[in-house]
Amino acid sequence: MPVTRSESKTTRGKTPYDGPSVVKKDGRSKVNQGGILGRLLEVNYDLFERTLFQMNLLELNSISEAHPKLRRLIRQHLQRSVYRMFTGLGFDPVHALEVLAESNSVVSGSSALLVLNPYTFIPRDLDVYCPRSQLDSVVASFLRKYPHFKRSLSPTEYDNIGHILSTVSLRDEERAINIIAARTENNLLPIFNFHSSVVMNYVSAWEIYSAYPDPTFTYRNIINRLAACMPGANSAKFAGCIAKYDERGYAYCADPTEWAGYQDKYFAQPSTERQLRDDGHFSLFWREESGLSGLMDEIWGTSSWKLAKSRLILS
Image (cartoon, rainbow, N blue to C red):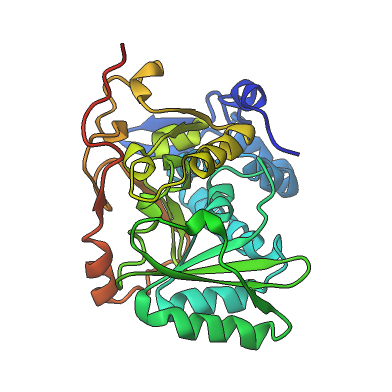
C-alpha cells in the first residue's frame, strides 16, 4: 500500500535511536550503553535487526559511525537489504549481482530508491542500466538464467530520455527486467536525465548512491525542468511520472527554496551543475572494496548534469 505524503511526514524524525544513544568523547565515538541501541544489542538482536529495517540509508550511516561493532552490523544489514531488492521481485540476487559486476551495470529507479528509503512502496520491475557495449551480454545472461522470459516492447517511460540508446524488456507473467543501454560507456548519464531527483540513485555490485540525499531522505522531489523541455518530451507522461512518486509520499516542486531550510542548500538547487563525487552526493559501499575497474571509475567520474538552466523566479 503506498505511503501517503502526510504519513511520511508524521513518521520522519521518530526513529528508534533518537536520543542519547551515541556520545562523543575525546574526538572518538562510542555507544552509550544507557541508550536504546546499546540495550537492543544486549537484549534482543532480532529486534535490533527489525529496527534497522525501519531506517533509511542516512540514518544507518549515522549509527554505523558510532562503534566498530555497529559498523560491521550495518554493513551486514546493507548486504541483506541489497539482496532483498532482488528477492522481493523474485530474482536470484547472487546471479543478478554477478551480472552487475561483470558488466559494470547498476540498478536504478524504484528498486534502488527502496534500498534508500525502505518500506514505502512495492516496486513493479527491475531497471538495469548498462554501458553501450554490454547490452547483448546482459540480456543473454538474464535469458540463460530465466529462459522462459519473453522479450516485450520497451516501456514508454524510457522514450526520449537523454543518453539512452535502447531498452530491452524481459518479462514473464509476474516479473519484468528493463535493461537500458546508454549511448556511451557511461551508463550513469541516463539516470541523471530522468524526470526528477527522486530516481537519481543507483545500486551497483559494491555501492549504494544518491545524487540528491537531502530531498530524497526527507521525502521530497525536485523536478528536472531540463528533461521536461527536451525535444519530443511527452508532457502528460512526464506529469504521470511525477504524480506516481507523489502518491508514494514524495512531495515535489520545481524550486526547492519553497521548502524550509533549503534556501542555502547549494547542491540541491536545480541550476547547480553537479558532479558524481561532489560534496552534494551520498554513498555507501556495502561491500568491503569496490571491484569497479579503474577505466569505468574514470568514465563514471566524467558524469555531470543539472536540473535547470537558471534559477526559477516565481512571481
